[in-house]
Image (cartoon, rainbow, N blue to C red; front, top):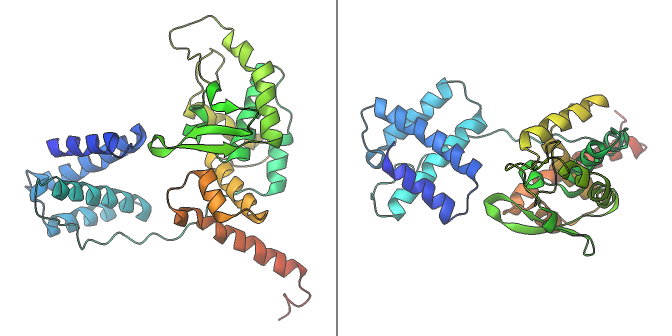
Length: 301
């Protein structure tokens, strides 16, 4: 691998606070970029030209990648070349006029309020695991967390008296997210009736005494386990469910209830409000449905 790639990845980790998952995604994209340019005879990426970049994009499209995947890879390459110029490794910026592929706007998948109630009102297993699973689903929907944020929660991140939970999002950025109602109750019941019994298993080196959500071996719950459980509980009530669907639904239902967009941005941990604004499109869909179903002349032809 070109050593400048490792320098760039180090920059992402140390100076920009990128998560390990983000760094690994950049590593894969840039390794593919280096391989394709190597096949064209480019030995050092700092010497890449505009035609090399164009060839890279053409190759990605020829492989049948979705526009969003092409956009992500091109974005990684553009960031990398900007880094080379900023560090004085080269004066050439071949990506300067390289446009990002246009990605069709895709509204996030959401479930209705009634479907969310159906999901969370279903019977859960008796015992500690049932308390944990209800807590997991209530917090995902009630706080709008990402899966990585949920499984990363420690008991010390909870402050029941304040009504907030401390969350570490992308780039290890800290924020406080309100928790109340059903999610708060599910958390309290899990802490009393669930977690102590999951922790009571025979101690092993892999156990994390600080972790909030535990598996049946007393270890921190993994992202993969949450994906599986959310899909299973969704299937039990006839829903095709993904953890991020609950985050999208949280945001959409908040806006439908009159939440301020800036407050929602802070709760979701979005760096840019334009990311949060996609939910206004979903909310407008809801408003149009209300209009069509209630105005006496809305459906006249």
